[in-house]
Amino acid sequence: MALRIMVVDDDVNIVEYLVNVLTAHGYETTGVTDREQALRFAAAQPPDLITLDMEMPGEAGPLLYKEIVALPGMEDTPFILICGLPGMHHAIPNAVATVNKPFDPEKLIGIIRETFPG
Image (cartoon, rainbow, N blue to C red):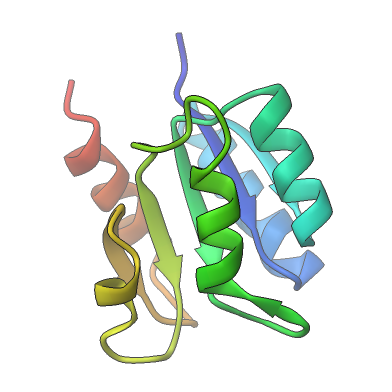
């Protein structure tokens, strides 16, 4: 069974790009562009991993993180933070990595493979 990954970013182009890259690597991927979509999807179909844009307008990444991990079954879900702020991963206990935009898609795939070996 393929890993389920949720991509959360306010930029529809980034979401589309990441969904295409991750899907091409065999991951079951859903992209969302706001808080409500992220919470609805995470509650309905809990992902195995989330990429989270920490700098979405009107959406505080750390607050959205706290709302997601408060959902049943989501407390241990790993996150890859998409962020330009140094040290942000220290604010997010489940962060397995932080990547800056623009990023190398192969680096992102490598992080996912390290997080879920085999």
